[in-house]
Length: 208
Image 1 (cartoon, rainbow, N blue to C red):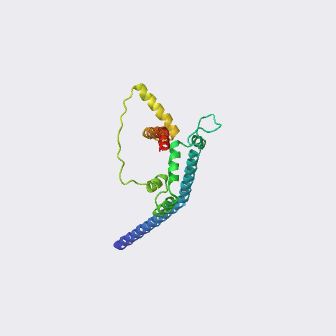
Image 2: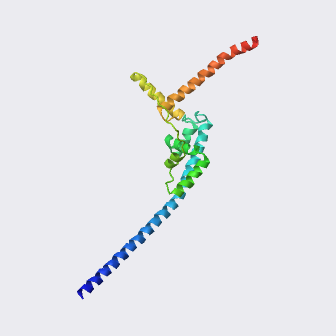
């Protein structure tokens, strides 16, 4: 009799454990379904956010090109249209540049990213978008180092000039600023050389 009671009690405990396990499985499945549904619900706002960033970047690029970096007309602040737009929007130059990079992604690539990323269940973020759609070079460019020997005063003047010109030219690094300035200076020199050689070419043409 005692053995029968013990067996019955063990059976009840087994049934209770089985029921508890089944309840846990049901709860886990329900929680997973909720998580997936929540993620799908959050994808729509994420897509809207990326589209808004893309449109903002497109318009910022148009503003930047509208005045060629010249100070805004009828403005005492000395800001360019692009700088004024960023100030009014409350965004940094780094954020504006990031959004403009998003706007530069071809429309077909952008839409393909939206569809494929959503199907794969990956996060629809700016970082993932740029990682997926940015062109990848086959070989890394070979970098060279240039060393300048400057006095303390020369270095301070150089650093200040690069900082000011970098803001005007919208470059991100000192290297980009220096290379942009050198490019402008070299282009101006080539144009001057062309103007100087033109009278000689005209004289040769007249003689011929």
